[in-house]
Length: 165
Image (cartoon, rainbow, N blue to C red):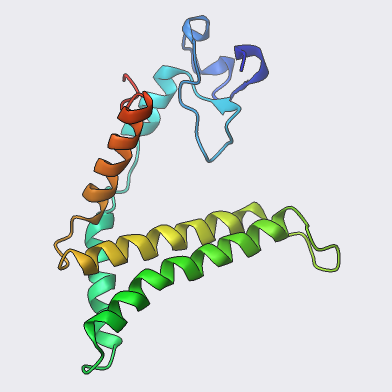
């Protein structure tokens, strides 16, 4: 995609040298794949966050432990396994439904918002992280395991694993 066909979000008033931009520096899901920040504004966005980073693996572990506590004590290990792994498929089905609504596949139903698709995808990720926590004994490593797998896939297909910043 050419530089001209993308939209610079920070605009000419940020004071940074936009002529030195080459590539989709700062592409972000919040604004879409065709919008980006110059490198200096992107770096500033990374450091300006007032909220501490979320410990997603700890949240996944804690939620997984809570979920396990809701099951009857005499439930077999295999049944718990299939419930946890099966939840991912259930959530994937909801992604499919939200996607169909977004693309208005059924004219008798209202068009759905993209936010519903993103929410359902997030539920899939949460279910997968929780299942990984369950299967690894709730060690709080689910995000590390997923990150390692994504790194392996990127390396296998030749995609950079860092943004070069």
